[in-house]
Length: 305
Image 1 (cartoon, rainbow, N blue to C red):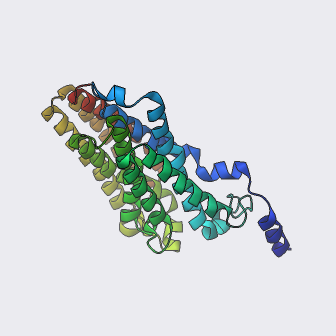
Image 2 (cartoon, rainbow, N blue to C red; image 1 turned 90 degrees about the horizontal axis):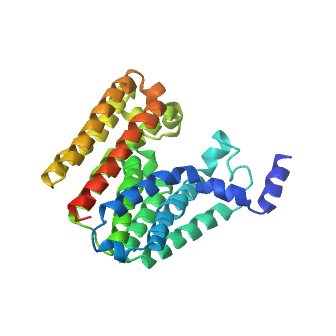
């Protein structure tokens, strides 16, 4: 009977709703926000004429629905065997995306991302290509970076924050952004590694059973929480110090104030990392991304916005 069910599922047509579910729209916010920060940070007296509304909108679509969406489909395809056990209701194991339709969607979405990226400019295309490489390397063998908390979280953080920020800046600047913009984007990428680690506390037993070496699995709950907090705070502290040196003291003070609030929240998180990780994601992470936007406006002013 189960064989008949599987065969009938394989003959079904892909469901549009299942395809949207694979693209996971809820995950698009982070790269779209980072793209917005990048676009704002590169704004200057001349850049407004170079990047119109439709160009920026295309970049937002590239960062969220296309690049992030493609990475989500790739991840589901590569995890289909695990999902068949743990989450059989997911689009692929449930048969709503039968056969290799999810793989074809991942390939088409990746190709579309590259096409749009290079259409927006060579530097945007290069960033899009690197993002595509990282998304496949994160999920697909033989690299499958997600099996190690250091490499996997770094790939996601760099793609969702640094590359998205760089892309937004490159679209608005019409070329390679200012070195200070690139460096700040890199710093926030490092900090985002700690945010990615917050998501690992909910699946420690499952990761251990499947051989996924997340930071909580490698070091234990409290040490991993300390690492996550340190990784989030230190890059922001560097930004808070750099902004006054670059001529934006009030923005630097605002970022420093947000760091202080995060540290207060981190004390509560450290009391129960597993239980409070979702709470900190909703509170401390919100302050983190607010600091990104403040830094972006500071850079815009430094560049003559």
